[in-house]
Length: 107
Image (cartoon, rainbow, N blue to C red; front, side, top):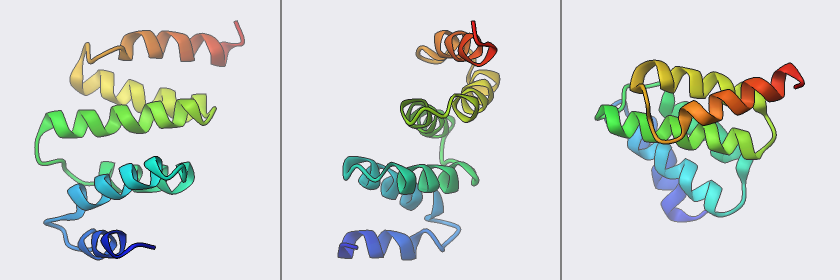
């Protein structure tokens, strides 16, 4: 693991820096193609209060799209439903919810 990643892992242990550090690690892992670790760090960031609602919504959106591209429709749908419940008409979340619901119903 690169020095920057190690520093971010250490920072994620601090309540003050947990969200930004975990979100950054998620993006780094995603950029590296390590989707499993990216999802883990997105989930860690989502488990704490985001600095702003917009940052929290963006993180949930990225988590949902990452799960969707990994072919985890049930988990992606759960994230998008949570996002829709808090952010309303955010980006293309309504369309994603409809598509994933149809997929999971087998239609």
